[in-house]
Length: 62
Image 1 (cartoon, one colour):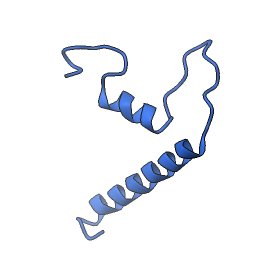
Image 2: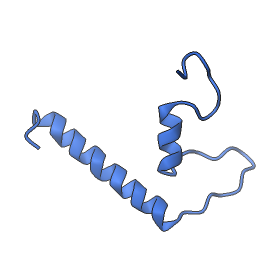
Image 3: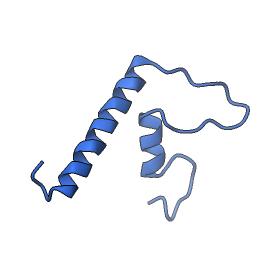
């Protein structure tokens, strides 16, 4: 959908960056606060990415 309608914030990458608090701030924007929820979501994302990498590398054994 984003290929045909390019508005800011409409791609999967932009949604994931927003959900996990990894999007970069624009010049002049104030610093975004880091909450416990943001840190928890980042740890969950890191754990999932680690598992997915092992899953792919082992051919599905993990």
